[in-house]
Length: 223
Image (cartoon, rainbow, N blue to C red):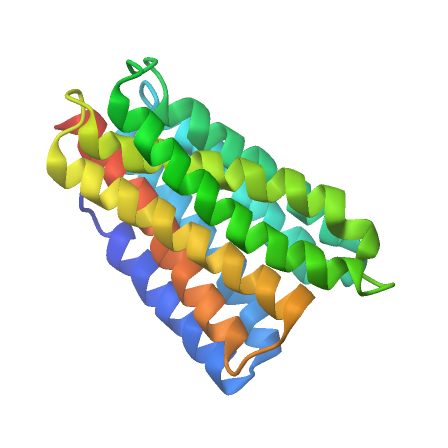
């Protein structure tokens, strides 16, 4: 699972975080998508896209497309959001193949994630309602946040599934949680109130989240 592409990917991610921290935008235009390219190369070379790894790989590819669209121009925000929505749908499909049994844990975790989603989205929705600029984003953000909440639930459920070993499930659940946190911070900074070093923390949790998802998926399939 570990080959030369993994440290190269991590090193490039760290370089991207430094670029964001220092405000080197031109460097970031290269390092952010290049990090996802190397993640895809590592993921493919380690797992050869066998089984559910192909679906995860499609999710990483859509994430790369989303990165490029969001960096290109603010006019491409909705297409970028759509690309990431497709990425999360791919992760959901990959996590739920084969379909898990609906145990009491599913309903308990489902209610917990639903409660968290309602808290977060209600705050975002109030801010968007009060803004003439962001009011039109209410429906897209509602759709996207619902899908990423389902991805988070799917990732957490691996911790309680007999077909997932604990180390792989812990990596996948951590990755899903970090990705969820990244998008939540991004939405809060964009629609509610900006906070210091937002782009840096969004980028760090985004990359570590993607790495967690990839490592968890590889360990699950290859172990």
